[in-house]
Image 1: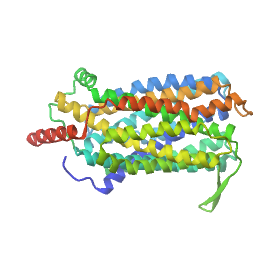
Image 2: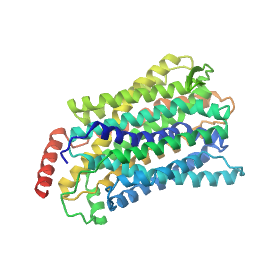
Image 3: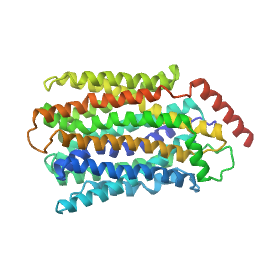
Image 4: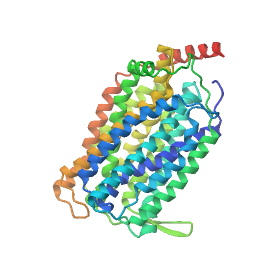
Amino acid sequence: MHEKISLKEKIGYGLGDAASSMFWKIFSMYLLFFYTDVFGLAPAVVGTMFLITRIWDSCFDPIVGILADRTRSKWGKFRPYLLWVAIPFAIIGVLTFYTPDFDEKGRIIYAYVTYSLMMMIYSLINVPYASLLGVMSSDRKERNTLSSYRMVFAFGGSLLALWLIEPLVNYFGGNLNSKTGWLATIAVFGLITTIFFWACFLFTKERIKPIGDEQNNLKEDLKDLWKNKPWWILLGAGIGALVFNSIRDGAAVYYFKYYVSSNVNFGFSLFGTDFHMTPTSIYLVLGQAANIIGVIIATPIANRIGKKKTFFGAMALAAVLSLIFYLFGKEDVFLIMSFQVLISICAGCVFPLIWSMYADSADYSEWKQGRRATGLVFSASSMSQKFGWTIGGAGAGWLLAYFGFQANVEQTAFTQNGIQLMLSILPAIAAVISVLFILFYPLSEEKLQLIEQDLNSKRDQNN
Protein backbone atom coordinates (compact mmCIF):
# COMPACT_ATOMS: atom_id res chain seq x y z
CA MET A 1 0.00 0.00 0.00
CA HIS A 2 2.85 2.39 0.85
CA GLU A 3 5.21 0.84 -1.72
CA LYS A 4 6.86 3.28 -4.11
CA ILE A 5 5.67 2.77 -7.69
CA SER A 6 8.63 2.00 -9.97
CA LEU A 7 9.23 3.70 -13.32
CA LYS A 8 8.70 0.35 -15.05
CA GLU A 9 5.27 -0.03 -13.47
CA LYS A 10 4.28 3.55 -14.34
CA ILE A 11 5.25 2.95 -17.96
CA GLY A 12 3.43 -0.38 -17.93
CA TYR A 13 0.29 1.29 -16.60
CA GLY A 14 0.56 4.00 -19.23
CA LEU A 15 0.77 1.45 -22.05
CA GLY A 16 -2.74 0.26 -21.21
CA ASP A 17 -4.25 3.62 -22.03
CA ALA A 18 -1.98 4.03 -25.04
CA ALA A 19 -3.73 0.93 -26.42
CA SER A 20 -7.26 2.07 -25.54
CA SER A 21 -6.67 5.59 -26.79
CA MET A 22 -5.51 4.49 -30.23
CA PHE A 23 -8.96 3.06 -30.98
CA TRP A 24 -10.78 5.74 -28.96
CA LYS A 25 -9.15 8.54 -30.93
CA ILE A 26 -9.68 6.80 -34.28
CA PHE A 27 -13.36 6.39 -33.34
CA SER A 28 -13.63 10.02 -32.18
CA MET A 29 -11.90 11.58 -35.17
CA TYR A 30 -12.62 9.25 -38.06
CA LEU A 31 -15.53 6.87 -37.42
CA LEU A 32 -18.26 9.36 -38.33
CA PHE A 33 -16.30 10.23 -41.47
CA PHE A 34 -15.77 6.52 -42.24
CA TYR A 35 -19.47 5.75 -41.91
CA THR A 36 -20.58 8.70 -44.10
CA ASP A 37 -17.85 8.91 -46.77
CA VAL A 38 -16.62 5.29 -46.99
CA PHE A 39 -19.32 3.03 -45.55
CA GLY A 40 -22.05 5.08 -47.26
CA LEU A 41 -24.52 5.91 -44.46
CA ALA A 42 -26.41 9.18 -44.00
CA PRO A 43 -25.07 11.35 -41.13
CA ALA A 44 -28.42 11.37 -39.31
CA VAL A 45 -28.49 7.55 -39.41
CA VAL A 46 -25.00 7.44 -37.94
CA GLY A 47 -25.89 9.99 -35.26
CA THR A 48 -28.89 7.91 -34.18
CA MET A 49 -26.77 4.75 -34.16
CA PHE A 50 -24.18 6.45 -31.98
CA LEU A 51 -26.90 7.52 -29.55
CA ILE A 52 -28.52 4.08 -29.25
CA THR A 53 -25.36 1.97 -29.10
CA ARG A 54 -23.49 4.32 -26.76
CA ILE A 55 -26.40 4.61 -24.31
CA TRP A 56 -26.44 0.82 -24.06
CA ASP A 57 -22.66 0.77 -23.78
CA SER A 58 -22.76 3.41 -21.03
CA CYS A 59 -25.22 1.27 -19.07
CA PHE A 60 -22.99 -1.75 -19.67
CA ASP A 61 -20.03 -0.09 -17.90
CA PRO A 62 -21.43 -0.50 -14.35
CA ILE A 63 -22.14 -4.17 -15.12
CA VAL A 64 -18.46 -4.60 -15.96
CA GLY A 65 -17.47 -2.73 -12.81
CA ILE A 66 -19.69 -4.94 -10.65
CA LEU A 67 -18.24 -8.03 -12.35
CA ALA A 68 -14.67 -6.80 -11.85
CA ASP A 69 -15.28 -6.04 -8.15
CA ARG A 70 -16.30 -9.68 -7.71
CA THR A 71 -13.49 -11.19 -9.77
CA ARG A 72 -11.07 -13.42 -7.84
CA SER A 73 -7.86 -14.59 -9.48
CA LYS A 74 -4.18 -15.03 -8.72
CA TRP A 75 -3.60 -11.82 -10.71
CA GLY A 76 -6.11 -9.72 -8.74
CA LYS A 77 -9.47 -8.21 -9.66
CA PHE A 78 -8.69 -5.93 -12.58
CA ARG A 79 -5.45 -7.05 -14.25
CA PRO A 80 -6.85 -10.33 -15.66
CA TYR A 81 -9.13 -8.44 -18.05
CA LEU A 82 -6.07 -6.92 -19.73
CA LEU A 83 -4.92 -10.46 -20.51
CA TRP A 84 -8.27 -11.98 -21.47
CA VAL A 85 -9.83 -9.23 -23.60
CA ALA A 86 -6.85 -7.85 -25.58
CA ILE A 87 -7.30 -10.14 -28.61
CA PRO A 88 -11.12 -9.78 -28.87
CA PHE A 89 -10.58 -6.00 -28.63
CA ALA A 90 -8.35 -6.08 -31.73
CA ILE A 91 -10.55 -8.47 -33.74
CA ILE A 92 -13.81 -6.58 -33.19
CA GLY A 93 -12.01 -3.32 -33.97
CA VAL A 94 -11.02 -4.66 -37.39
CA LEU A 95 -14.56 -5.92 -38.05
CA THR A 96 -15.95 -2.48 -37.22
CA PHE A 97 -13.98 -1.01 -40.13
CA TYR A 98 -14.90 -3.77 -42.58
CA THR A 99 -17.41 -2.79 -45.27
CA PRO A 100 -19.53 -5.79 -46.34
CA ASP A 101 -21.14 -6.03 -49.77
CA PHE A 102 -24.68 -5.52 -48.42
CA ASP A 103 -27.52 -3.24 -49.41
CA GLU A 104 -28.12 -0.12 -47.31
CA LYS A 105 -30.32 -1.88 -44.76
CA GLY A 106 -27.78 -4.70 -44.40
CA ARG A 107 -24.94 -2.22 -43.90
CA ILE A 108 -26.91 -0.37 -41.22
CA ILE A 109 -27.56 -3.64 -39.34
CA TYR A 110 -23.90 -4.65 -39.70
CA ALA A 111 -22.78 -1.25 -38.40
CA TYR A 112 -25.11 -1.47 -35.40
CA VAL A 113 -23.94 -4.99 -34.49
CA THR A 114 -20.19 -4.50 -34.91
CA TYR A 115 -20.11 -1.06 -33.30
CA SER A 116 -22.19 -2.26 -30.34
CA LEU A 117 -19.84 -5.23 -29.86
CA MET A 118 -16.82 -2.94 -30.12
CA MET A 119 -18.11 -0.63 -27.42
CA MET A 120 -18.92 -3.58 -25.11
CA ILE A 121 -15.45 -5.07 -25.62
CA TYR A 122 -13.98 -1.63 -25.02
CA SER A 123 -15.81 -1.50 -21.68
CA LEU A 124 -14.66 -5.02 -20.73
CA ILE A 125 -11.04 -3.99 -20.92
CA ASN A 126 -11.12 -0.27 -20.19
CA VAL A 127 -13.26 -0.26 -17.03
CA PRO A 128 -10.96 -2.74 -15.20
CA TYR A 129 -7.95 -0.84 -16.53
CA ALA A 130 -9.28 2.47 -15.17
CA SER A 131 -10.17 0.81 -11.84
CA LEU A 132 -6.60 -0.43 -11.52
CA LEU A 133 -5.50 3.12 -10.63
CA GLY A 134 -7.55 2.94 -7.43
CA VAL A 135 -5.74 -0.16 -6.12
CA MET A 136 -2.14 0.47 -7.20
CA SER A 137 -1.45 3.11 -4.52
CA SER A 138 -3.24 5.02 -1.75
CA ASP A 139 -0.91 8.03 -1.98
CA ARG A 140 -2.59 11.09 -3.58
CA LYS A 141 0.56 12.41 -5.24
CA GLU A 142 1.49 8.94 -6.46
CA ARG A 143 -1.96 8.69 -8.01
CA ASN A 144 -1.52 12.08 -9.67
CA THR A 145 1.75 10.82 -11.13
CA LEU A 146 0.21 7.53 -12.28
CA SER A 147 -2.70 9.41 -13.81
CA SER A 148 -0.28 11.71 -15.60
CA TYR A 149 1.69 8.75 -16.95
CA ARG A 150 -1.58 7.25 -18.08
CA MET A 151 -2.59 10.42 -19.90
CA VAL A 152 0.84 11.01 -21.45
CA PHE A 153 0.76 7.49 -22.88
CA ALA A 154 -2.90 7.88 -23.83
CA PHE A 155 -2.20 11.00 -25.84
CA GLY A 156 1.02 9.41 -27.11
CA GLY A 157 -1.00 6.47 -28.43
CA SER A 158 -3.51 8.89 -29.94
CA LEU A 159 -0.68 10.90 -31.46
CA LEU A 160 0.78 7.75 -33.05
CA ALA A 161 -2.64 6.77 -34.40
CA LEU A 162 -3.39 10.21 -35.85
CA TRP A 163 0.12 10.54 -37.28
CA LEU A 164 -0.12 7.22 -39.11
CA ILE A 165 -3.82 6.73 -39.86
CA GLU A 166 -4.14 8.70 -43.11
CA PRO A 167 -0.68 7.76 -44.44
CA LEU A 168 -1.37 4.07 -43.76
CA VAL A 169 -4.87 4.17 -45.29
CA ASN A 170 -3.40 5.87 -48.36
CA TYR A 171 -0.50 3.39 -48.44
CA PHE A 172 -2.72 0.30 -48.25
CA GLY A 173 -5.62 1.65 -50.33
CA GLY A 174 -4.51 4.64 -52.35
CA ASN A 175 -6.87 7.21 -50.85
CA LEU A 176 -8.91 8.02 -47.75
CA ASN A 177 -12.09 6.51 -49.23
CA SER A 178 -10.49 3.07 -49.65
CA LYS A 179 -12.29 0.21 -47.88
CA THR A 180 -9.21 -2.03 -48.12
CA GLY A 181 -6.97 0.73 -46.79
CA TRP A 182 -9.09 1.19 -43.66
CA LEU A 183 -9.32 -2.54 -42.96
CA ALA A 184 -5.56 -3.13 -43.24
CA THR A 185 -4.73 -0.05 -41.20
CA ILE A 186 -6.98 -1.03 -38.28
CA ALA A 187 -5.45 -4.53 -38.35
CA VAL A 188 -2.03 -2.95 -37.80
CA PHE A 189 -3.32 -0.96 -34.85
CA GLY A 190 -5.05 -4.08 -33.47
CA LEU A 191 -1.70 -5.86 -33.26
CA ILE A 192 -0.11 -2.90 -31.48
CA THR A 193 -2.94 -2.63 -28.92
CA THR A 194 -2.72 -6.32 -28.05
CA ILE A 195 1.00 -6.03 -27.28
CA PHE A 196 0.45 -2.89 -25.17
CA PHE A 197 -2.39 -4.42 -23.11
CA TRP A 198 -0.34 -7.51 -22.35
CA ALA A 199 2.64 -5.36 -21.30
CA CYS A 200 0.34 -3.44 -18.93
CA PHE A 201 -0.83 -6.72 -17.43
CA LEU A 202 2.73 -7.95 -16.89
CA PHE A 203 4.21 -4.77 -15.40
CA THR A 204 1.50 -3.63 -12.94
CA LYS A 205 0.51 -4.75 -9.43
CA GLU A 206 -2.64 -4.46 -7.29
CA ARG A 207 -1.92 -3.40 -3.68
CA ILE A 208 -4.96 -1.79 -1.99
CA LYS A 209 -7.25 -3.99 0.08
CA PRO A 210 -10.60 -2.75 1.48
CA ILE A 211 -10.69 -1.89 5.18
CA GLY A 212 -14.10 -3.53 5.67
CA ASP A 213 -15.51 -7.01 5.22
CA GLU A 214 -15.48 -7.53 1.45
CA GLN A 215 -18.82 -9.22 0.89
CA ASN A 216 -19.68 -6.90 -2.02
CA ASN A 217 -23.38 -6.41 -1.45
CA LEU A 218 -24.53 -4.85 -4.72
CA LYS A 219 -27.44 -3.00 -3.12
CA GLU A 220 -25.13 -1.41 -0.57
CA ASP A 221 -22.55 -0.58 -3.27
CA LEU A 222 -25.18 1.26 -5.30
CA LYS A 223 -26.49 3.02 -2.19
CA ASP A 224 -22.96 4.21 -1.36
CA LEU A 225 -22.50 5.52 -4.90
CA TRP A 226 -25.84 7.35 -4.70
CA LYS A 227 -24.64 9.17 -1.56
CA ASN A 228 -21.26 10.07 -3.06
CA LYS A 229 -21.68 13.81 -3.72
CA PRO A 230 -18.14 14.37 -5.15
CA TRP A 231 -18.74 11.61 -7.69
CA TRP A 232 -22.01 13.17 -8.88
CA ILE A 233 -20.31 16.52 -9.40
CA LEU A 234 -17.48 14.86 -11.33
CA LEU A 235 -20.14 13.12 -13.41
CA GLY A 236 -21.50 16.46 -14.61
CA ALA A 237 -18.07 18.02 -15.10
CA GLY A 238 -16.83 14.94 -16.97
CA ILE A 239 -19.82 14.85 -19.32
CA GLY A 240 -19.31 18.53 -20.14
CA ALA A 241 -15.60 17.99 -20.85
CA LEU A 242 -16.29 14.96 -23.06
CA VAL A 243 -18.98 16.77 -25.05
CA PHE A 244 -16.49 19.60 -25.54
CA ASN A 245 -13.91 17.22 -26.97
CA SER A 246 -16.18 14.88 -28.92
CA ILE A 247 -17.94 17.64 -30.89
CA ARG A 248 -14.57 19.19 -31.83
CA ASP A 249 -13.10 15.78 -32.67
CA GLY A 250 -16.08 14.67 -34.73
CA ALA A 251 -16.10 17.83 -36.85
CA ALA A 252 -12.34 18.25 -37.41
CA VAL A 253 -12.01 16.07 -40.52
CA TYR A 254 -15.04 17.74 -42.11
CA TYR A 255 -13.68 21.19 -41.19
CA PHE A 256 -10.58 20.68 -43.31
CA LYS A 257 -12.13 18.64 -46.12
CA TYR A 258 -15.15 20.89 -46.69
CA TYR A 259 -14.25 24.30 -45.19
CA VAL A 260 -10.50 24.95 -45.22
CA SER A 261 -10.06 22.75 -48.32
CA SER A 262 -6.26 22.98 -48.36
CA ASN A 263 -4.53 20.53 -50.67
CA VAL A 264 -1.05 21.11 -49.27
CA ASN A 265 0.68 17.89 -48.15
CA PHE A 266 3.83 17.37 -46.07
CA GLY A 267 5.95 14.30 -46.71
CA PHE A 268 8.05 12.03 -44.49
CA SER A 269 9.72 8.63 -44.79
CA LEU A 270 9.19 5.63 -42.52
CA PHE A 271 11.08 2.34 -42.95
CA GLY A 272 12.08 3.37 -46.46
CA THR A 273 8.51 4.25 -47.49
CA ASP A 274 7.33 7.77 -48.34
CA PHE A 275 4.18 9.01 -46.61
CA HIS A 276 2.29 12.30 -46.90
CA MET A 277 0.47 14.22 -44.16
CA THR A 278 -2.52 16.38 -44.99
CA PRO A 279 -3.41 19.58 -43.08
CA THR A 280 -6.08 17.51 -41.32
CA SER A 281 -3.45 15.10 -40.00
CA ILE A 282 -1.18 17.98 -38.96
CA TYR A 283 -4.05 19.66 -37.09
CA LEU A 284 -4.91 16.43 -35.27
CA VAL A 285 -1.29 15.54 -34.50
CA LEU A 286 -0.65 19.05 -33.15
CA GLY A 287 -3.68 18.62 -30.92
CA GLN A 288 -2.41 15.34 -29.49
CA ALA A 289 1.10 16.72 -28.96
CA ALA A 290 -0.41 19.71 -27.15
CA ASN A 291 -2.60 17.37 -25.08
CA ILE A 292 0.61 15.71 -23.86
CA ILE A 293 1.99 19.11 -22.82
CA GLY A 294 -1.22 19.71 -20.89
CA VAL A 295 -0.93 16.35 -19.15
CA ILE A 296 2.69 17.01 -18.19
CA ILE A 297 1.98 20.42 -16.65
CA ALA A 298 -1.25 19.32 -14.94
CA THR A 299 0.41 17.41 -12.08
CA PRO A 300 2.86 20.12 -10.89
CA ILE A 301 0.12 22.76 -11.17
CA ALA A 302 -2.41 20.58 -9.31
CA ASN A 303 0.14 19.71 -6.61
CA ARG A 304 0.68 23.43 -6.10
CA ILE A 305 -2.82 24.95 -6.29
CA GLY A 306 -5.07 21.86 -6.12
CA LYS A 307 -6.95 19.73 -8.62
CA LYS A 308 -10.20 21.70 -8.48
CA LYS A 309 -8.61 25.06 -9.30
CA THR A 310 -6.50 23.53 -12.07
CA PHE A 311 -9.55 21.86 -13.63
CA PHE A 312 -11.59 25.07 -13.38
CA GLY A 313 -8.88 27.24 -14.95
CA ALA A 314 -8.18 24.85 -17.82
CA MET A 315 -11.82 24.44 -18.88
CA ALA A 316 -12.60 28.17 -18.50
CA LEU A 317 -9.66 29.08 -20.72
CA ALA A 318 -10.65 26.39 -23.26
CA ALA A 319 -14.12 27.97 -23.47
CA VAL A 320 -12.73 31.44 -24.15
CA LEU A 321 -10.26 30.21 -26.78
CA SER A 322 -12.99 28.19 -28.51
CA LEU A 323 -15.18 31.28 -28.83
CA ILE A 324 -12.30 33.15 -30.48
CA PHE A 325 -11.75 30.17 -32.83
CA TYR A 326 -15.07 30.96 -34.55
CA LEU A 327 -13.65 34.23 -35.91
CA PHE A 328 -11.03 32.51 -38.10
CA GLY A 329 -11.57 32.28 -41.85
CA LYS A 330 -10.48 29.39 -44.06
CA GLU A 331 -7.30 31.26 -45.00
CA ASP A 332 -6.20 31.70 -41.35
CA VAL A 333 -4.40 28.36 -41.24
CA PHE A 334 -1.64 29.57 -38.90
CA LEU A 335 -4.16 30.87 -36.35
CA ILE A 336 -6.26 27.71 -36.66
CA MET A 337 -3.22 25.54 -35.90
CA SER A 338 -2.02 27.85 -33.09
CA PHE A 339 -5.36 27.87 -31.29
CA GLN A 340 -5.65 24.11 -31.74
CA VAL A 341 -2.43 23.84 -29.74
CA LEU A 342 -3.64 26.23 -27.00
CA ILE A 343 -7.08 24.62 -26.67
CA SER A 344 -5.58 21.14 -26.64
CA ILE A 345 -3.15 22.06 -23.86
CA CYS A 346 -6.15 23.09 -21.76
CA ALA A 347 -8.01 19.87 -22.60
CA GLY A 348 -4.92 17.83 -21.81
CA CYS A 349 -4.76 19.30 -18.31
CA VAL A 350 -8.25 18.08 -17.45
CA PHE A 351 -8.16 14.34 -18.07
CA PRO A 352 -5.39 13.21 -15.70
CA LEU A 353 -7.07 15.33 -13.04
CA ILE A 354 -10.52 13.88 -13.46
CA TRP A 355 -9.36 10.24 -13.21
CA SER A 356 -7.28 11.05 -10.15
CA MET A 357 -10.32 12.80 -8.68
CA TYR A 358 -12.45 9.72 -9.33
CA ALA A 359 -9.93 7.70 -7.29
CA ASP A 360 -10.31 10.32 -4.55
CA SER A 361 -14.10 9.91 -4.70
CA ALA A 362 -13.65 6.15 -4.17
CA ASP A 363 -11.56 6.93 -1.07
CA TYR A 364 -14.24 9.38 0.09
CA SER A 365 -16.91 6.70 -0.23
CA GLU A 366 -14.82 4.18 1.72
CA TRP A 367 -14.04 6.78 4.39
CA LYS A 368 -17.67 7.84 4.68
CA GLN A 369 -19.40 4.45 4.39
CA GLY A 370 -16.69 2.00 5.54
CA ARG A 371 -16.94 0.00 2.32
CA ARG A 372 -15.06 0.16 -0.98
CA ALA A 373 -16.31 -0.63 -4.50
CA THR A 374 -13.51 0.65 -6.73
CA GLY A 375 -14.74 -1.10 -9.86
CA LEU A 376 -18.25 0.32 -9.51
CA VAL A 377 -16.97 3.87 -8.90
CA PHE A 378 -14.66 3.77 -11.92
CA SER A 379 -17.19 2.00 -14.14
CA ALA A 380 -19.78 4.60 -13.27
CA SER A 381 -17.15 7.22 -14.03
CA SER A 382 -16.43 5.55 -17.37
CA MET A 383 -20.19 5.56 -17.95
CA SER A 384 -20.21 9.34 -17.54
CA GLN A 385 -17.44 9.62 -20.10
CA LYS A 386 -19.42 7.45 -22.49
CA PHE A 387 -22.51 9.63 -21.98
CA GLY A 388 -20.46 12.71 -22.85
CA TRP A 389 -19.04 10.95 -25.88
CA THR A 390 -22.56 9.78 -26.78
CA ILE A 391 -24.04 13.26 -26.64
CA GLY A 392 -21.13 14.76 -28.56
CA GLY A 393 -20.88 11.98 -31.16
CA ALA A 394 -24.61 11.69 -31.82
CA GLY A 395 -24.90 15.47 -31.77
CA ALA A 396 -22.16 15.77 -34.39
CA GLY A 397 -24.05 13.48 -36.77
CA TRP A 398 -27.36 15.23 -36.19
CA LEU A 399 -25.79 18.67 -36.52
CA LEU A 400 -24.24 17.74 -39.85
CA ALA A 401 -27.66 16.58 -41.02
CA TYR A 402 -29.30 19.76 -39.70
CA PHE A 403 -26.77 21.94 -41.51
CA GLY A 404 -27.50 20.07 -44.77
CA PHE A 405 -24.27 18.10 -45.10
CA GLN A 406 -23.94 15.79 -48.14
CA ALA A 407 -20.91 13.52 -48.39
CA ASN A 408 -18.28 14.06 -51.10
CA VAL A 409 -19.85 17.19 -52.66
CA GLU A 410 -19.15 20.91 -52.28
CA GLN A 411 -20.96 22.25 -49.21
CA THR A 412 -23.22 25.30 -49.02
CA ALA A 413 -22.26 28.39 -47.02
CA PHE A 414 -24.84 27.40 -44.40
CA THR A 415 -23.24 23.94 -44.01
CA GLN A 416 -19.74 25.39 -43.82
CA ASN A 417 -20.82 27.82 -41.11
CA GLY A 418 -22.38 24.93 -39.20
CA ILE A 419 -19.10 23.04 -39.33
CA GLN A 420 -17.37 26.19 -38.01
CA LEU A 421 -19.80 26.30 -35.08
CA MET A 422 -18.98 22.66 -34.27
CA LEU A 423 -15.31 23.59 -33.83
CA SER A 424 -15.92 26.70 -31.72
CA ILE A 425 -19.10 28.01 -30.10
CA LEU A 426 -20.88 24.70 -29.48
CA PRO A 427 -17.88 23.11 -27.69
CA ALA A 428 -17.45 26.35 -25.71
CA ILE A 429 -20.96 25.94 -24.31
CA ALA A 430 -20.10 22.41 -23.14
CA ALA A 431 -16.90 23.71 -21.51
CA VAL A 432 -18.88 26.32 -19.56
CA ILE A 433 -21.23 23.59 -18.28
CA SER A 434 -18.20 21.63 -17.06
CA VAL A 435 -16.85 24.71 -15.27
CA LEU A 436 -20.18 25.32 -13.51
CA PHE A 437 -20.21 21.77 -12.13
CA ILE A 438 -16.62 21.79 -10.87
CA LEU A 439 -17.32 24.96 -8.88
CA PHE A 440 -19.29 22.80 -6.42
CA TYR A 441 -16.68 20.02 -6.01
CA PRO A 442 -16.21 19.65 -2.21
CA LEU A 443 -12.94 17.70 -1.82
CA SER A 444 -10.20 20.21 -1.05
CA GLU A 445 -6.58 19.13 -0.76
CA GLU A 446 -6.78 19.51 3.04
CA LYS A 447 -9.86 17.26 3.21
CA LEU A 448 -8.21 14.66 0.99
CA GLN A 449 -5.13 14.62 3.20
CA LEU A 450 -7.31 13.94 6.24
CA ILE A 451 -9.16 11.13 4.43
CA GLU A 452 -5.90 9.55 3.25
CA GLN A 453 -4.38 9.59 6.74
CA ASP A 454 -7.50 8.11 8.33
CA LEU A 455 -7.82 5.30 5.76
CA ASN A 456 -4.12 4.44 5.92
CA SER A 457 -4.34 4.22 9.70
CA LYS A 458 -7.27 1.81 9.49
CA ARG A 459 -5.54 -0.32 6.84
CA ASP A 460 -2.37 -0.51 8.94
CA GLN A 461 -4.45 -1.70 11.90
CA ASN A 462 -6.07 -4.40 9.75
CA ASN A 463 -2.69 -5.57 8.50
